Amino acid sequence: MDQLSQSVSQLVDYFERFPGIGNKSAQRLAYYILRIPEAEATALADAILQVKKNVHYCSVCFNLTEEKLCSVCSDNRRDRTRVLVVEQPRDLMALEATANYRGLYHVLLGRIAPLEGIGPEQLTIEALTARIKEGTIEEIIMGTNPTLEGDGTALYISNVVGNLPIKITRLARGITSGSVLEHANREMLSDAIDGRQPF
Image (cartoon, rainbow, N blue to C red; front, side, top):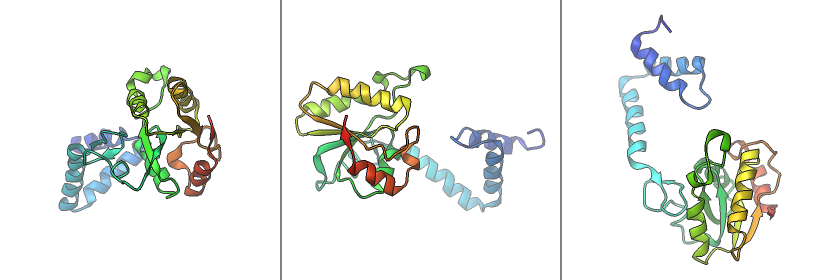
């Protein structure tokens, strides 16, 4: 890094903080920024600022939105009796891309991971329970990632809401154990939604 200027080194350091970006990729991104016109670099910086300023969590499901409600929650054509519980907004986007699910969602904003210091109180489980107690939800579909933490989170939620009058199902295991929803293809996700099972 000594041969890079201070500004380039700083940019590389920031890019390395991105998930999945190592030093070589960070350097390629930094050099790409150096090559593009200043107007394009300014537009990129402005886009980042706009996202940070305008995007927040939906007040109902915790999906990303620029309004009070996200596009799913504000769509009156959705089936309001079913809620698919996912870990992150990107999982919701992957499932929406299948165009196979017409219910609502609830985004946990993570999963229970004791080794990382993430407990149930840091997720949106309490808000999910409050939604169920409103009485319109008939089915909760567990769509947490099929990993040790994802399965543990789903089990915890099923125990918390198990005494409420709702059906609890989970996505079918067309999704390989240990994989992440965001990386599954549309067909796998469609099969998982159609083949969901009692939890």
